[in-house]
Image (cartoon, one colour):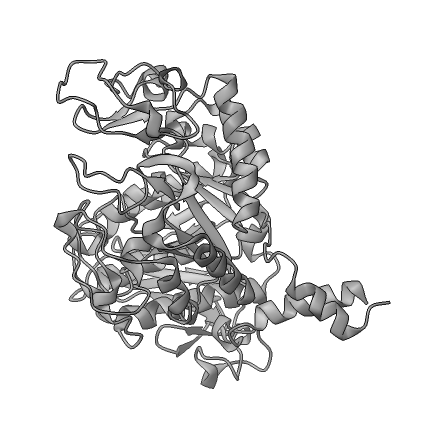
Length: 530
């Protein structure tokens, strides 16, 4: 039998990879990072004009240095932009600072740091009990055309690409012209003649074998816990199951469409998808006081019945690097807070894009890829506080109810057209799009017990459910949302509304000391060896 010291010593030399399954990811919340724009290694104040479309100096070491900032908001997973070598030359649309213009999948992008730096990031995350998700691009490589001619096919130097370095490794050059023709979508190219995205021939069995072998090694080498996969709909569906199996970790795909039926097909071949079909009506509902809140319910209920696993495990988001920031549509505080809250009541995994918490307002690419270091990583901002609260509330709900992650969110009908009530016991989200100068009210029955005391975790205001009708009545202050939990779900020594906590409750995300999750993993492993 191993001694405690020997077991601990053995643990320290084991690879720190959780190889997390889809089920293990469901309880997580994700902070999305564009590595070049998150943090500098030395925390200097480098200039970074988004319009220049150049590298600004963000690095993997910079991320490590600011993990406290991410974890203090309640996030326990980080999604980073692609890490492999990209085109070095300038292109018609700037440099590949974002990481999505691959040239060599067997080398790292040295602009972000060394292999040791990347491995140190994985180790630092795992020591905190956090997961690492890495973005990958399977659909295409990028190379500047060898001439300025726009006549197709264009000429390319394939020798600088790896491992797909022959013209026959790619589909013949043609640009997508018909998104209703799936063959055209899968086998023609994204981009344009100024910067063609060279579509890899994933019908070629040799290419397929290379990809599957690569992803197994990639995940293991860098201790990756999950993969976000770019441009999934541009590759035939039957490519994905073997690729996902070879990866051996959670896979979530980008399928850019508002069509639920179309998206549903990809939930059959990957673990999950980003929930774009719900994102569209959410943005439209909350970016104006005349938005249609009922469209959210329609999209959610259709997706719940259409996707393989419903919305469970999908990626719920309000912003990302591909879409204009929400605050480029409106900066109304009430609308913004309601919209930000929605992913945390969603059945899926909440995802927050860097800068959202700091109130960034960049519109379409490249303006939505601002450097975060200009914010000073302030933690006392109103939106940072709001995100901490909704993130912690979700984790409290997870801890308070073993069925929270498997219970579908449902909608409680409201007479107020500017109000929507979403129930996911023990959590209730009361949202509105009346804006900061408007008024709204909610009346909700059948969610909580008669006479039960509940609390809005955003204000710590308590409510008592009517002892006769079982109805909870509430109104909005300055158009703000209400995120309701039973006081019994709170913890008296926690960080969220501790003064009104019941005698029993679950532990808050932020009441767990940094590294405590990692310590519990160590303890579990030690007991295994003992």
